[in-house]
Image (tube, rainbow, N blue to C red; front, side, top):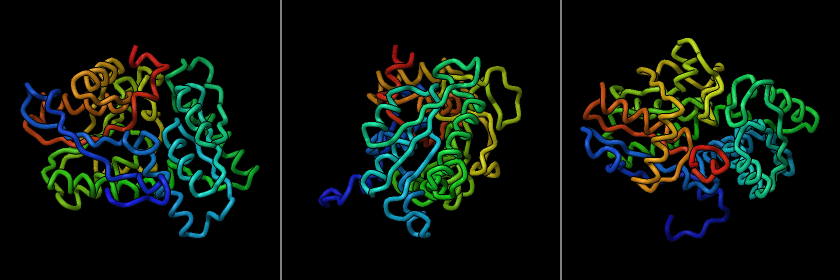
Length: 318
């Protein structure tokens, strides 16, 4: 690919590098291998699902030239869709909660998207989006889709989300690690990364353990009582059913606090030079928990989900 001129920036999506987090783990037994998804054109792993969903819709004849695409987003999927729709000639409408960081809305607008911002539910703090907030965004997304006779990308239900990680991310992980993977983990957003990667990795080695990462105060998927649904880890942990999340692949759950996600994201920047967001901090914090506990000595693989540039208006990097 190095010697190829691409016909569009969408062809630069995927094939992201893997980095050994040797500085964060220097006093621990085991390894953390981090896949740098923020080097995608839209600075997140969600570029992958945007491309896969749009191309599967094109192949199925559902999406026609000049059509409009609509999607609910916390910002990353919307950015990916803005890029893919832009180069392919579709109009794109992103529907997002006002609780998400405003860098995301601005970036989508610059990329040509129409951004519709939805008020949060009463009592929801800015920067802490709950499932209730997301339900309000979903109502607006459905309404706009109907009014404009648009294609709904629907990341929480569209199988293209899972396929992006099953056919691409998971395969890349296996090749880059030469199959030396003991553990895969991911923070629960739509569930597509977790299920897609777990499915592929377990196809090659059924003994790989797969952990789902959740906010400490909103441990919905592990069936524990929630103490605060308004956590800071943007892009997931919404305490809602995820059709794409296959619990059969889950070995166990790991719970990470806002403070742990924040602290580790900052350490990741200082020690490894990796400038990432809240959910990436949560992933690495979970991996460190495992290396200090029941997965001592393991090779753990995770994704660095998006760039810290998307969080400069938050308290993540104060």
